[in-house]
Length: 511
Image (cartoon, rainbow, N blue to C red; front, side, top):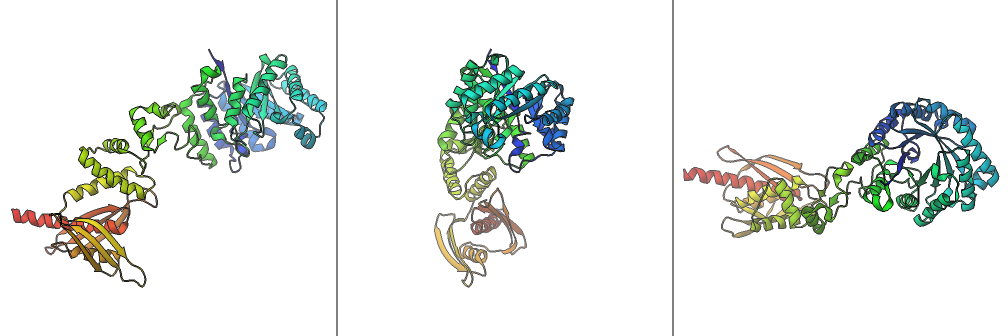
């Protein structure tokens, strides 16, 4: 059996310190319930002395956590802080006081104005005082990543001897390289008497983009608790991302000799919940929970994933609660991806017809960042209209403006395949286009209705135009056309309506 790595979630404390991420008590309770569902080991619910709201949050979260997980309150190494935290934690069945102080030369000299000996004395007192209220006390050595290693060994030894059940070694500024940080943990394990009987925790920040790597290197060197946040929220560049370390340990548990008890299927839900409450969006390419984490755009990747998911996905989307792999259709997509998606929409084509469809798809994809299902539906329907058509619009060029005269040049093919190039002017670009069409087609009608709608998302959406024209016998014929150019869409719609009029007339003659 591999080592159990405890997951200490500090979204509600350190995560809330992200600018703009402040949460009220009700919002914290919603997230806390999700953390309980995820089976995290520790919820750091807040800093009780900092505000009445934080005090209340810690107290209320203690009620809902029950025996499921430990509820932790942060303090400084100050008696009053510890007393207030103990009061807030009275509702918790498994309370923990998290107390400590800075240990780097910068913190001792510039912030605390303490000598090393004075810092050790304060650490011992804080741990012992906290043990008067709870049995579970975690000692943090803030900025341990930049501390003198000899002093770090001495202060951690003092905390363990004073009764700390957990020692937290933070790289508060994200300064360390992973291997250096791992060495610090290894040396503490080797030199601190009794440390084998306490939990070694690490709290790493992402200032150099290595928070997850720092935490994992620490685990490899003996750490048994990781302090992290949903979506990597936290001060400055954020904390270790819970979803990243949990899935990394799941994927490499044997190599790390480690596992967690987190319910990974809840990770995506937790990410979206925190994003919704804080208003801080997750970057699309965020590992594990980003919108693009299981999305494939390259044709080579799409073909591989469609043949076997694990060719390009090391994680099953279901394992993290994601909807599934997503094939993003774009100009980089290949035949396999388009045929697969059209098949899901219910369309099948022989090889010759599919090649025609694929070429039209590329035309659309070159004009849009992403081709959606609605675009594909419209594309196929437009092709079906053209296959049955008497007249088809091959090309259209329009010039207009103020004070220009709207002019349209159209290339129209008839049922015999003869191409007609015509030009007309009008009161506007649509009028000019329709008059150009009228120069070729055999019948004419009056425009009775004209409507436009976007059939997919984005400013580059395909526009579908619906027109209704009234024939001489007063019957109304409907035509639709779709294209990324709205004037082209309107011309296609008009030609389609004219085709319907002609087909109806020929049907009557045939009878």
